[in-house]
Image (tube, rainbow, N blue to C red; front, side):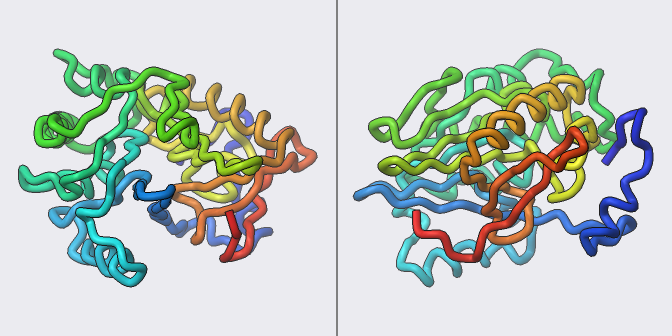
Length: 262
C-alpha cells in the first residue's frame, strides 16, 4: 500500500481499530448467488496452480449442494490471478457451464500488443503475468460474454459497472432483489481501514493509481450517501457492510452481521 503525499503515516488509524500496521491480512471473499434456476459466481479466487488449498471452494459449494457444473454465470471483475485463476487453470475451464461476463476494456487491455503498466508500481514479473492472463482468456474464450459499462443481465438483477484504475476494465456489480440492492465493489478497497480512511491511498497492483483514486472517491461518495449495502472481495469475512463518512473527509467501513437476509 502506498500513502498519498499529504498523509504518509496511517499507523494511528490502524492501531485505533485494533489492526497491526506492520502486518495486514488480505482477505478473499467469493460471492455465490442463486436466482431461480441460475447460479452466479462473482470472481473465483486463486486456482489450483496458485493455491494448494484451492479445494476449499469446491468443499464450501458442495456443503450447500452446488457443484462447479451447476454454475451458469461467472462475473469477472478483472483479470488478476486471485480473481481469474479459479475460472481457468491448466488449459481447463473449471466452471464449464458458466457464461463468463467481463467488460470489453478488460479483454482489450490484456490482449493488446503492449499492455501499458507505465503508471503501475508493480515489481513482479509483468510479462509472465500477461502471458498467464492471455492464456486464461484463450481457455475461457468459448464462454466469454463481452459487455460495456451499464449492461444488465438476468432481467436486470445484475448491472455491470465500469470502475477503472485498478485495471483498465475493472468492474463492480450492482445486485438487485426487489427493492434491495447490494454493490459488489471488487478491488476498490483492499483493507477495511486503508482506502476508506483516505481514498487517496493506493496499492501497488493498481494499474493507474490516479484513475483508481478518482473512481474510489466517486463510488465511496455515492454509497456513503445512499447507505447501500456493500460486498468487498478483500474485506474481512463475510465482506458485508456499509460505508459512512468518518468526519475527516474520508470514510469508515461498518461491517454487517455474519447473516443478512437478502
